[in-house]
Structures are given as structure tokens and as C-alpha cells.
Amino acid sequence: KNPNNGAGIYPHARCCKFTQDIQCRTEFGTSQTNIGQVSREICTTHNGIPTIMLGCSGRTVNNDDENFDGVYPGENDPSAYGTTSFGIDYPRPMDEECNARSNGFEVEAQANCCTASVGLECNVVY
Image (tube, rainbow, N blue to C red; front, side, top):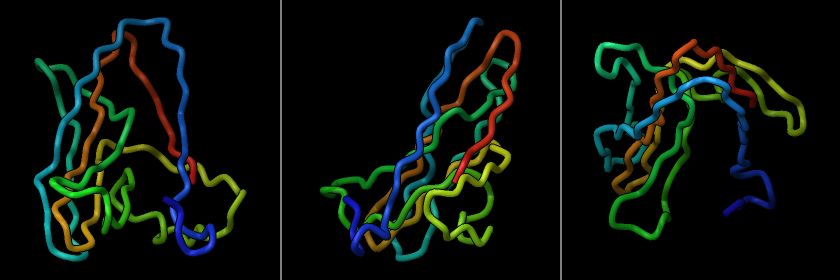
């Protein structure tokens, strides 16, 4: 849903073609239920190999996806960057942290944590 006359949520996609062996798994953050609380998941290692976060999403638990206040990769909410103009790309380093903010219902962050045979370098664009 995109409320507020189009000033709400906008999706961003990253499409990749890998010429290497890549293994991914979804990791879930600790659920949060209070308004403003953040569920956080950080990709670290899998079988001793460092992981890279290639995706960040969130979900409400036992709810029909209402009262969900947003998801963002990285330590800071994108509003901390002052990026409020639509249609302008703002590349930021992609760290290994995924955050989902509750708006009063149970929410969980979902990080797509991956290992690669050669290594990866990613940015996120707002």
C-alpha cells in the first residue's frame, strides 16, 4: 500500500546475475510489538564464512500487514540522511543490518544473508 497521496512507501529492487557460487538463507530478527520499536537482524557468518546481506524485508506476525512502519537496511533510518526528494538516487553503503519498525503490532526483520565464493560488494539506493 502507498498511503498519503503517494508519499508513503516506494519499493527499490536490486537485480543481480552471479557467475559464482552463492548460498543464501533468511534470518529473522527478534519480534517487537511496541510503537517505534525496531526488530533488528545482523548477518554475520555461516559455517565460519562471513555473510553479506543481499536483501532486507520485514513482516507483521499474526496480522494482515497493517500498522507496519517500515523497513530499512543499515544502522540509520533513511530519513537520517535527509533524502526526501522523489526520483533522485542516493547510493549508500550496504552494511549487514536489517531493521523493521513496529507501529503497534508484532513485527520481525528478515535479512537475506549470503555467502559467495568470490565475494560481493553492494550498495543500497534511496
